[in-house]
Amino acid sequence: MVYPWQQDQWQQLIQQNKRLPHALLLTGIRGIGKAHFAVCFMRAQLCQATYSDLCNCHSCRLIAGKSHPNILWIEPEKAGGAIKVDQIREVSDFVNQTSLQGEYRFVLIDPASSMNINAANALLKTLEEPAAHAILILISEQASHLPATVLSRCQHLHFPRPEKSLAHKWLADKISTDVDLALQLTHGAPLAALHFAQQDKFAVRASLLQVLHKLVNKQLSVLSGAAEINEIDISFLLDTMLTVITDILHLHYDDQELINTDFRAQLMELQQQTSSQQLIAHMNFLMRLRAQQQQGFNHNKQLLIENLFIRWMECAHVSG
Image (cartoon, rainbow, N blue to C red; front, side, top):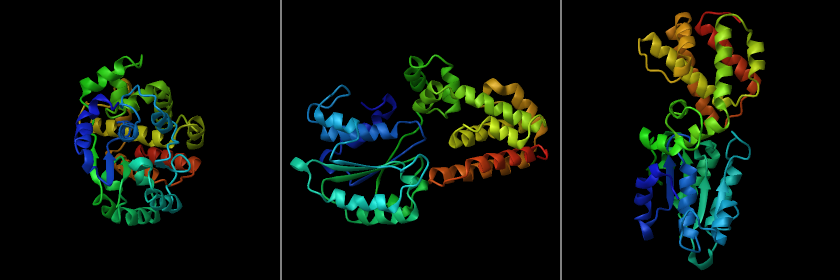
């Protein structure tokens, strides 16, 4: 079933019953469970028994294996890549096929923000002429990542961060590490926090912060620093650097509320060594890169890391 913090959205959707939207946009931060919600909704419509989280009917098993004939899954062909126009062109033919026994046909596009401009334009044609008994579900972190023409043709369901107590209760019996810190580092998203702990992102984050500290103190070159973290996921690198810069800026402006609370001593030292003006410029650069990542832009990983570290050292007026 849907997660505890998704009950309001679930009730809002299922109460529409026979007036379900032709296109649905699910938004919210990464790790809030948007894709899970979409799968639950599709199962509820296609289940051959009385739908529940324990249902093991043929239809529910096919959905779990992403092989149900009434569902078209549209995802980037490779992680972090773009959804291309050829993939979206399949949508029109699929939704206009005749469903068995009048069942719904679903198209799940995740993440919709990774569609390139040609793909988005191709999707618009399908949205403008909705097929009977077909529902398109788009998933995106932010509605602003999609063209206004697409947004205007979708019913919008937003998933805010759950209450801290609810997220903590759900996560507490699933991980053995610091629950509050895991939630804090993932902006309060329970699934992201669970993944963070299970994949030992704490250790990866510690390695990155150590490299950043050494770079500022001239204990490491850009090339050596990049080599030390060459296995890091780019999205994780960008997100973590953003939290570090946010924390240092908080300290620059005498705000003691930090994200990386367990590294307060190192952050206070970095605050003394860095320029707030340069940090803000670097933060803006990181945010542009993050948006490009979400849109499927393919960066050269080695060059990107080296560029990030050079700019990071400039924040402390350190030459590479």
